[in-house]
Structure formats: structure tokens, C-alpha cells
Image (cartoon, rainbow over the protein chains, first blue to last red):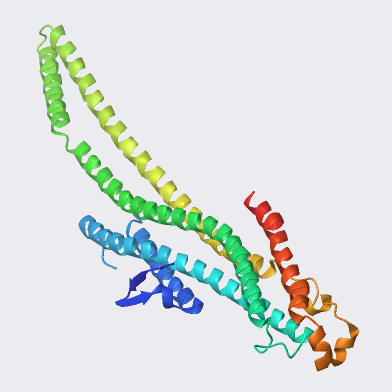
Length: 47
Length: 294
């Protein structure tokens, strides 16, 4: 099954060839950035 | 920290929206890939363990069983077949969990997109409230009415001072004007109240959505761990090794070429390893797997 590719911070990640640990690390990075963006947006509207 | 204007805030929020859209999609894709990889790796490990167990068991039956035996190829095919069957059962088990997790991933995408939309909507409502307040203060119709009412009151006062008869029509018109002014004020206040209420509901929605995202994330993690354990526990032997169940003639403790020619290793392997494993898989499919699927 083709899992596809993801572009993140100017790097291309081919999900089919990544190990479990690599996937876990990438998932954590993206999740953290996403949460930071949301918190940033919430701070902007705190008025 | 310098105070940002409304336009600056809106611009920053738009940038965050564009970045977040991409991150939400990427997060879902990587999460899906991770879930699949956990399934693949766990199943692979389990199949390898079973293969090692079978190899060990065969060596217990007959350590000299190899390519030189005429039934080796058939036995090898049978073993490959049973291991494929074993792997297939494990894949069905993992699919059961992965299906549920997939639904949760999609729900998370939906919630996160809603969250970003609501945050941007909050800024829009904030600006709308400010605008409505400003309009309310500077309503030209209301101001002109106020001036006219003030002038009319002045005229009536003057007439009264000059001891002229009070014009009833004028008083009536004055009261109508006051009613109109009050109506405009009320409508304007109502509109403003509605937007304030909408903003409050939006803020509640943001809070609730965040909570739900957290719950869904935890549930994905929990199900993934549960799946891993279920795959490892599936079709596990209660005994320490399969070979404990193997019954072979006692004479095999010192096997000789004479007895080897009379002893059908392939048949023993079939009866003591392959058939019981097939039965275990079948039992798993008809009982545990079927119960799970409902």
C-alpha cells in the first residue's frame, strides 16, 4: 500500500521507506508545530 | 509587546491558517503511515517467531531433515502455506483496529479544521462588534432625530413661556419622534447583543473542540497500543514450545539411518506441527476474530 510523501521543513519524506522510529519522530514534530500554531492564533485573539 | 492593529492580527491569522491547513493534512498522513507500520512490524515479528518455532520443532523431530529428503519440498510448501494463513489471520485482526483508528484520524482532521476556522471567526466577530458599536455611536439618523427632538422641545418651551397655546400636534409629533429614536436604539442594541452572543458561543465551541481533539488523540494512541498487544497475544501457545506436544517414538532419541528410512518425517511434521497450527488459526478466526467483528 502506497503511503505517499510528505513535505515538511523543505524536506521530502517518503513514508513507505521510513522506519517506525522515524515516523514517530516526524509525527511528533508535525504535531508540536501544529499545536504551537494554534496556541499562537489563540493568543492573537485574546482580547 | 506592541499592540497590533486589527488588520495586522487578521493578516497573521491568515498566515497561520495557511500553515495549519498543510500541517493538519501532513499530520493525518504521517499518523496513518505510523499506524500501518506498527501493524506491519508487529505481524512480521510474530510470523518470524512462529517460523523460528517451527524450525526448532522440526529439528527436534529429525535434525537431519533437509533438501536431500524427497519430501522436503512438499513439507516446505505446506509450511509456507500455513504461515501465509497465519499472517492473513493477523492482518485481519490488525485491519479491525486500523479501521477504527482511521475513523478517529478523519474526525481529528475535521475537528482541527473547525478549530482554526472558529479562531479566525472569533477575530471577525470581534471586529464586527467594534464596528457595530461605532455605528451605534455615530448613527446619523439617530443623531438627526435627537437634534430635531431637542429643537421641538425648545419651541414648545418658548411657546409656554410666551403664554401661547401649546400646540397639541407638535407635542404628538415630538412623542412619535421619541418613539422612533427609542426603536432605532433598541434594534441597534439587539443586533449588537446577537453578535456578542454569537461570539460567546464561538468561544465555547473553541474550548469544546480543543477538549475533543485531545480525547481523540489519546484514543488513537490507546487503540494502537491495544492492537499491538492483541496481535502479539493472538494464537499464542500456552506451552513454552510447540515441541512439547510432539509425540515421537522413544527410539528416536538415538536415530539411526535404519530407522530414518522407516520413519516418515514429513508425516510427523504434518501431524504434529502443521495440522495443529492450522487448527489454531481456524479456531482463532471462527471464535476470537468473529466475536470481535460482531
